[in-house]
Image (cartoon, rainbow, N blue to C red; front, side, top):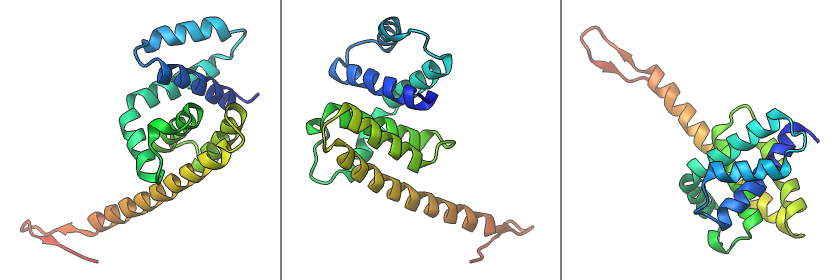
Length: 165
């Protein structure tokens, strides 16, 4: 199994555990998980798993707000635990892992949701994540346009700004 795929599957399992037992300490959860599941696990799998899990936990409020905004008529607490955590992990990747194309993250999420979830999990996860991806694309295009406009402003020697375009 490819390193990142294996790491994503491990991260979903850890996020599931943390979602159901929010008072558990992250380092203790890692220790227990790796004790039970570390039969020759590649160190790169462990590293990426822990990056994803820590990242989701650190940015959970932001990630959950993104899900709420894009999952019409769905309360996040009523979503399946698997689907909710697969989406959290994928949104973390889309927001904080620029080396991973969003389409790759979404494809992996759909496959993992199908593997761990129910028959309709893949479609649900794909629908919400695709909407989030489109919103992120719009946001990045708007941010890029703002940067270009800011770069077009020049400062005259007298300190007055010249607005162009």
